[in-house]
View 1 (tube, one colour):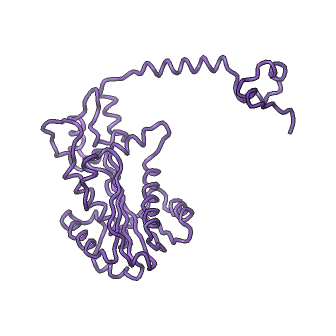
View 2: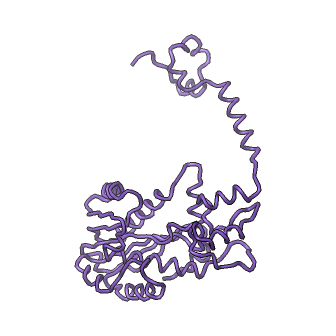
Length: 308
């Protein structure tokens, strides 16, 4: 698992994949999808989505590797199981999508809202499509749900017709192929956390920030300690999370964007002086419409119709 490219620039999204086993291109395969690091507000590493796939005929062999939900294993156990999966590369393949905290936050705060569920769905769909594009003969897909399982299952079934899709809560404890995906994702995240390169100069930073979840006292203490009153948080904090936003609102310096106000005033003036598009279809405007036709319509020789 070579993470050097992501470590060199950990501000965006990065895909990493194993070699595709030859048998996966000739036999019907099953594939599992799971993630690691979805919940924390404070995160010196990304959210990682993982897929793992193998021939349907090899399900029992995958089960014999004793894969389990990564959350029930310690780091050493996860590393050991990932090594076993890597050694089974003759019939097991995997792929990962690493989403940085910065990428998650900027996506969620962009003008057109893109929430975490939509981001998660699109990432999972992208990985499944990657497997198909790589020639993997997918017949079964198992997914740990994000949001309502029935709606997510319907969405994936429509997106990938001809593939049997099963979406379940706690799928990582029900299906070995999802457990394997969970292990791949968590191992990648653990390694990224250890090798994280900070874009900001934080001096002697305290790395003991607890679990990263907002109800952890150590996490709250860290968030208060490293909140810059002007620039906010370093990139590895998910500043789109309500916990971080609340602290910035209460502890940071308010910022007023005067340019935004001018834009709003200018827009309001334009609204007063310009006719709404709907007015061109209004009977009351017929009297002066010919004299005040906008150049958009006259240049294209467009005329209003009184009836259809």
